[in-house]
Length: 176
Image (cartoon, rainbow, N blue to C red; front, side, top):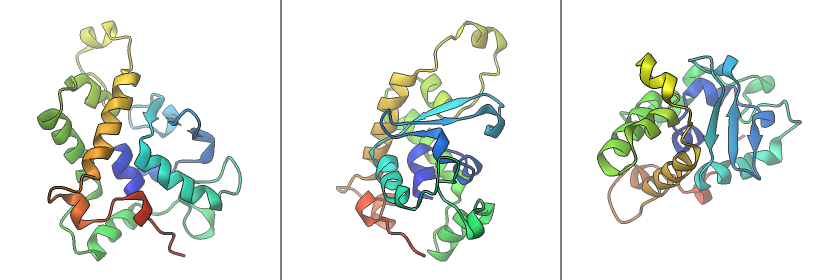
């Protein structure tokens, strides 16, 4: 769940993620188009929070084709697994709502252009003319945006989701 929040990914993208898609050195998660809603390859800049989680779970990696977060029998966790975490904590949030929170935060609290957060969410530009001229994936700006998102989630000097749910990488533990 935390990895999904730190990356603003869809739960299905996280549940199906394999080590083959991760480049820890370059700090990039490369999701192939066949696993994406829009059918296009998508690169996700990995912020410090996401990297900290991957560093912890890589101890359980079997090979480059294994899932980042395997469920029973090495299969992908179910769609309900992350929702159950929130429900068990008696929190009134949804997993997909975390993506909505990311978008609201990016628009209301940062100066990043809207196109950057839209690209971070892997949303397609529905304006065909504008999309045909746009040749960038805003990767450098998305790196900065995702770093700012991680900093926002881990801010300690205000009441926020991070004070309700321990989002600090050091608080992550493997529960077997």
